[in-house]
Image (cartoon, rainbow over all chains, first blue to last red; front, side, top):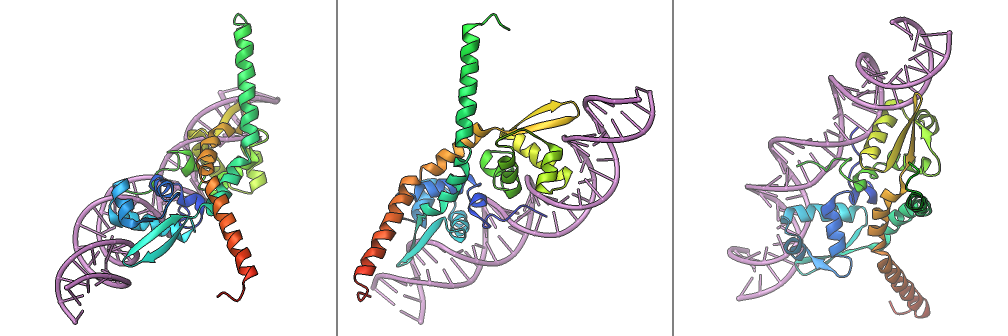
Length: 113
Length: 113
DNA sequence: CGATTATATTCCCATAAAGGAATATATTGG
DNA sequence: CCAATATATTCCTTTATGGGAATATAATCG
């Protein structure tokens, strides 16, 4: 079996750095495809393809205005990712404090190798 | 160019659902490869390969104990993902309240179609 | 309607994935 | 050192990229 498709879910879709760049760019305001192309310096077909993936998994919304298409990040669909990563938050805090206290102990007694 | 490699960064590594399952399992305690195989009902070579990817990007730590290898989630390396997704948090809150108030308005004036 | 602008899709290519099976490597006990 | 246990790696196959170039589709203007 090959890898899961990029439009199978949000985790796969955001694995691609340019798609994250697009989401960042479209977070605060709607943008046309042309604007994205100009800002991110990507080829137009490339941007359209990435937008397709993002749209398929619901990470962006699309709206037509005349001949331009306006895209915008659908932040709500990023929430599950935030929640999953957040489930590890307590742990990294514990792990960091443990490292920290170990470091402090080492500072207090540097001779204890 | 093809897709980025799964061991190029954490975003790519966690795109695979079984790797997320492994991270969940190893979050609270160290586990041997055999335990992971048993718990997740995956083939042993498959687990070893996934662990390799996770280890390459720093998402798990490894430690040998006799003939078994003990792996553990390195929560700190998940933090960047949490921070990136968190940068959209304000937005989805705004978007949700906007949807909510729109729904309330609709409830107040259902005749205004 | 025809030309133009804005996007989307298709085709081709090189690369990387993930599973399964088989095999290699490492470590321990005797 | 040899057998057994625990993991890791390799080989093979199928599938899905993502970029570039070319082309198709959609919508506006005159």
